[in-house]
Image (cartoon, rainbow, N blue to C red; front, side):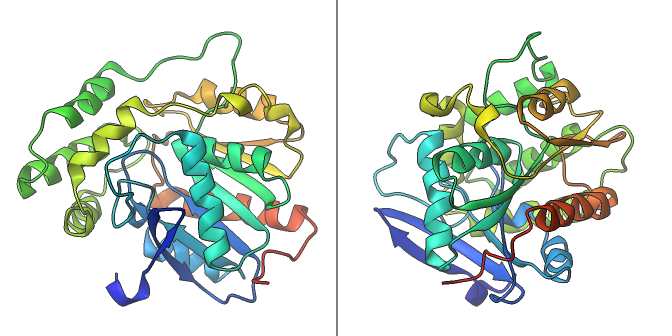
Length: 291
């Protein structure tokens, strides 16, 4: 990643780092990453493949990841993070965009679509869950992954090898049984994550993240084209989470990633990109271009 390709801007007291791929005259696609992960986990090659399909691709660091931060280590909510998505669109002068969110990013995409319905053209959620109650109750995170997540509170994030080992361990645990874990690429991204981060200790803020109650149980109000992509071997948000999300949104299409875990595995890039681009076409609108 070229540092000069990244843009850091300040809006409403929040510093946000963002980067784009492709032509700004193409429809915009905003990539929203999950908890404790910066934008680099949207692999550059993946972003360029999307751009090659005629999309203006935007990725950004969520708060307390990468180069995005707010002074004073404040308490913030998922709604604040959803607002950050719109701040990024405003920075790029994008009126309306297609959204692709992974994990927590998929839940943020739901809030953005509900709170700012005029800004979203379509929505795709990968390895995510429904921002609503579900019946029957949804399965919890695998015990090993939950214990690993709790380690965020205690490890020495200033120790490079310790931090990178934690990220590698997390990647292995998240990889589905039907996929081969790419340790080399995961190490490269983990090293980059460590180098870019202002302070990795702030990742533990995600363990107490709350808010967004105003938009809870309102997913049926989403009326843009929606794709729900979910791996059958997801141990963070097991497959029933994806099924529940697809049921909750009128007309949503469930795309099953057989054997995939809680990941954006290279083996699934083609299927994910096809689903996103189909939603772009289904929206029937060529908006998303800068004003």
